[in-house]
Image (cartoon, rainbow, N blue to C red):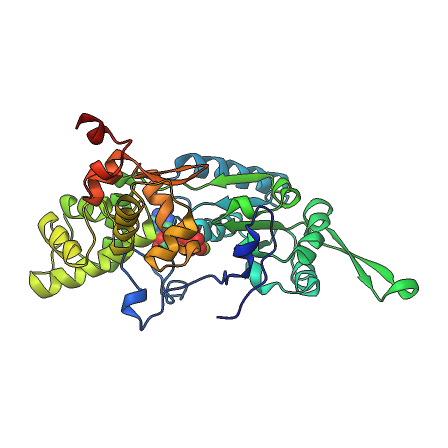
Length: 372
Ligand SMILES: Nc1ncnc2c1ncn2[C@@H]1O[C@H](COP(=O)(O)OP(=O)(O)OP(=O)(O)O)[C@@H](O)[C@H]1O
Ligand SMILES: [Mg+2]
């Protein structure tokens, strides 16, 4: 993968050298394609992705976000204005791209999609912006990776719907002002902290997407099973939901795996027992953790005595990219309370110790150790 220059605030300079390309799973690399990977499949954005909801009504969960968006879209329509600029942030696979498409569809306008790292030159951005018609949506995925030089053009584009483009150098330089149509910028990021303050402030609507509850995921599974024409009972969809790391993308992937298993080993109907058997055989445990999550936990518990340990140290020990650990592994472990982040580094909690299977005696501050 080509090395990319990363511009943004709050980045550890040593991390800037690392590639930050949006990773998708390699279709032919089973090792790199664990079933619990929340990063997209290469085929996910294909037109055949029948599972992606296309309207507010089909979108499961995130009630507060939906309620607010529905009002924003309806209000903009009745004023005959573009929807305010929207920023979505949250871990991979929770529905940011899906929501961007839904907003444009519900508003009845076209969506143009691009991503931060592909906007290399200011001219790329100016070209995109000047092609937008009134009310159209420009969706920028991985918006935290827009180069700073390009980002500066977005400030006036977002605020005043114009760009001032400077041509030539020195005394020959001229400023050309392009008037833009009123458009809606929708940005998505897994790392809101890396967005610069001026850019973040120009979004009228900012939403954080959180992990889904098991009940919501069970509804996602049932909806997808209906679309894929798979028979599944309530216990079966609950079992898949429970092991999906709070992430609809994973729920859909696990459903496909369990469907195959049910077809080959049973009569094709997914029950709780079949789902549990299939997922355990895929290495997905009852909390929805996979090999890398467990490796992270046991490394922190065993080799670092429960922590605190720095992210880069853990990454080196488990031989994994620190960005993957930070974006993919840690958010869910934090969410379910198996680890905590402290100024001194990552630490396991008592439940993390218990789940890792490492005796807590090694962690001197732990509850069990204090009992001994
Ligand atoms: N609320 C939802 N209801 C039903 N299915 C959903 C929902 N959210 C996401 N999905 C499913 O999960 C898949 C992944 O969602 P999406 O691509 O929108 O995630 P994302 O947040 O953009 O992820 P990334 O950060 O990797 O770009 C979708 O194709 C869709 O099938
Ligand atoms: Mg996306």
